[in-house]
Length: 393
Image (tube, rainbow, N blue to C red; front, side, top):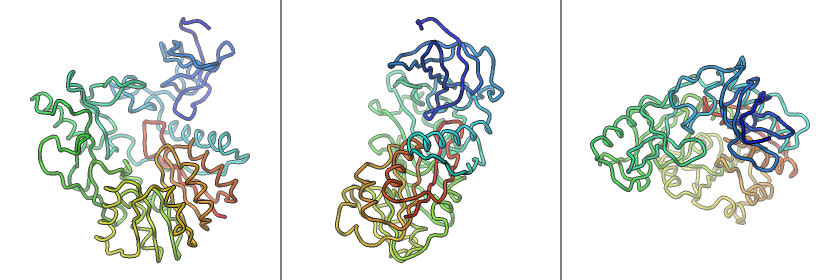
């Protein structure tokens, strides 16, 4: 295989969102492809026997392919599934989860499961990070696979409130009113207002930003632009219902608890809740949110999750453990600590099927079995998907 363009037929979409093809005895991975596409592609890079390529021409379109509506698609690194119709996006995400569970978790039989579609395929993102180059005055998202900034005037997946903030920032750029050493802005929409800040926590228009409130399933959360919080408001009530199911009892432990999205409803179901979060500002917000809700039976511990699990105080009998780790999944020390803790039931909430499968393999080897799996399309137009898995010993 040489550096000239060549033809491939896309077989399926792999975890990570790339299309899989084979040519001249090599595996070819193609960005922004659809299953069934016949494409002319060009080599971007080679790693061992794997070729990474980009599309030069769509020779014959897959029946699943549609025309992406966003003018930045293909340059902006934010969305990589706009070329697929929405039903195909959902089915592809289910297959990605199945593939990871088969290959990485070594499950011979993957339980049947549903994926809950997003009520809105567009304009759903209630949280965003915009990159800023003060020299070129570009504001937007990184281009795919690079640190070049794609200058974005209108984002098709942003909630209207955040689109309005993006437009305000662009006007400030035109007026040369933004700090010259600012590199990015984070923004999150609440019930009635938006919190926005640069990497130093400063509001770009100088107003005091005391945070925003977000109401989910009857619970009120105070948070700010620096807080991690789920990006798709529409699916949060269903996500919480699935994660907590019908569990109730004496003691629950929550790992990577953030500002308390699951902590508050857990505290209404269990006599005692311990929530562990390494980020101090997030832990402080969780304490505030619990106090505002009048819930005194939950303790928020600001500590590294693995370190907390290694403590003797973490060894008390636990009825239910919920973990919602970052995309990198749980450290091996965390999985070891969970197995040592021996909770009767576990709920693993994951935004990455590959790291989920890796961790499930360890939990299953430690004596747990999968009771149920359910997926939620929290991130339409991208390959990302949220998965909730229940296990019991």
